[in-house]
Image (spheres, rainbow, N blue to C red):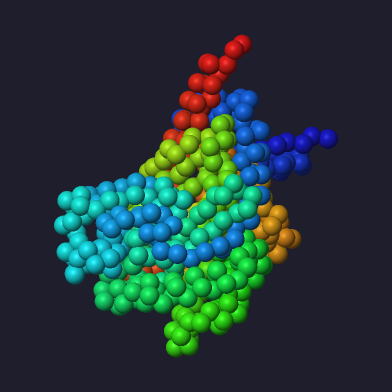
Length: 465
């Protein structure tokens, strides 16, 4: 019996089938242009298989717990005039509108200027210090701006050698600092978060057993959240865990009512715990020679960057893309800034856009259809080293979410990671204009592959024959 395997054009397979021959179609594509030699080099690297197994196991072995809430000046050592931002390194001269707006709001919040717009000249002159959140074991959604007086979630893992990660508190939706807004309502909210919300959460967290954030992620993925743009179940579970300690914390009852109202009415509140939980797990997989596993994807509104386990702290960057999706009110594509934020750390860990099959309702926010969501999760498995048995998807027979993005698989299949994201207005001060889907610029993966191949050749040259 003749059996033909066909790849490429369907016309050829159909012609053979018309002759009563059994045909198996294979979805094959040529690798990304210019990557063939580097793919061959990395494929023969004797460290690669074991290194990737080690990296994936280290990532999967982390249990992230919320252990404290404290000001950034205390836990990150930020001083007056020192600001963190989302994405790879960038200066004021290339900063996007929403990043500039977020920095201006933070400068006014810190009392460095009376009018946020007066901060622009100080940033332009180099009077203030800018660094990526990732360089301080932190992550920030959208603009990701962190200043000394902002309160931070502190996550830790007992098995991670004392490793900790950090993220600011979530402001809610609409006109907020992380979307580049800086009017009086933004500053008033930030001051309330500094004076009331942060201290109340600190009392609650310090007055109870640590909150198992990884465990909450496990449950929320089975309750219709994908932990990037849908966090309703996660937020309510967090509030459930903290409520007894909040009530017994001694916080003024009027302030306590505000705290409950704010968290309960902010479906995205848990996002700022999901993100550092993902970073904590991915940081455990860093710095393993030979590993091709991606450990960070981040955007600053101008550049999209990735970091890879086997290449240390190097960033591989390309131009951030404008998401495609749904817009608020009268806003349209011309109003949207290119992709921004550290929240793609969720996709790097296998949730968010990688787990859309578990949250079909997300398509009403970011666009597409339910079949698209299911297909996206299946497609992401093709570029990952494995799956996460703790984070499973009921509709896919409780299959674990795809985990461990592999640079070589991305280059070989040309399938790019899918990210679902909010969209910030291009002009500073606008706020959120929509939400949608986006992928990294394709060139960042061949660049990372080239560096991996270079390191592999260097090791081979120094290894005795």
